[in-house]
Image 1: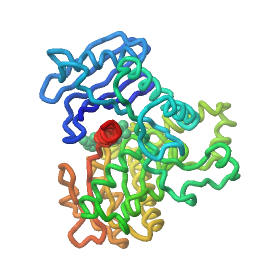
Image 2: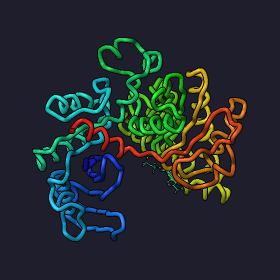
Image 3: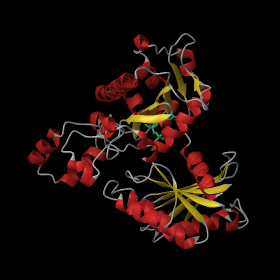
Length: 398
Ligand code: ADP
């Protein structure tokens, strides 16, 4: 089926139009500055990019602009909107209500609304995208695919926080986890590479999604048993701009000294922390690599801290699962930064992880980078969240 995938932010809409069977991407692009002025960038493989300033007072005009360009004789890829079989939406937070993707109806929208307190930045924006598509394309079936859903198999000991139990029972405070669509894709591909796709029982995989935002998932028998992000995506290890876990005492201490309110404090933890915060240089690991090689000590420390914390999570998840068969690196850093992969996994020979430096240095698609005598297989697998969204959408809309 031909699926339009929508990832709506508060002032942006990313889209991809793809074949859910072959994975072929026909077109993709971005609407930016929605509510300000509006800009569309549209890409079709093998053709020059199309860019245009188009007024987008709301998400509705953005979706209309996407459909217009998709059917344009010059830049388009379809003759009519009828060729879009269904629409799949990326939704950040499904709370405990969604263990899998679902057809969007009024009940689904109401449930996504109930999850707004857990994802206050993303869920309202995702809903704007959903509502715009329903208005502009009322006849198309739409599907919501949740970042949290794949993690809903975690056992209570992994998802419960050690605070009064009533906050879990009454208010839903628990670990939810994110990047679930990516971790699900990685789990599926890894099981296939291990020859265990039909027999996942007994397999132990650690999926490392290392991008701007990063998380690890421990996946046993093909199901998540633990993950590093929490109620929200600020938790875990340091990321590009997010702090990861910190001692909560720091929050009270700094709010007191600088007379900050909680919003200002959270803004610092979300946008000004992580490797950007430590280095003062950049949130982008390419910039940090360059600065560290130039002798910038704080950039070097930021990289060291990142690697150290990821290594600790790998060790923790191997302990949690009683071993590990495969470790997988994915997303911008995991797929492209061989040096960091080596630093994160290089010291783990005692646990049977042996990287082959030559394989690790090569670029390419899906590949094994562990040595022939490594007990644990290490793979690099480019993630493909869009394909998962397209496949779920096609499955639910057939
Ligand atoms: P997002 O979470 O926004 O999708 P990505 O998965 O694209 O982010 O990851 C962004 C990070 O990946 C950046 O820190 C960047 O340095 C790194 N990265 C992306 N592409 C490359 C590349 N070709 N070589 C080295 N690092 C890369």
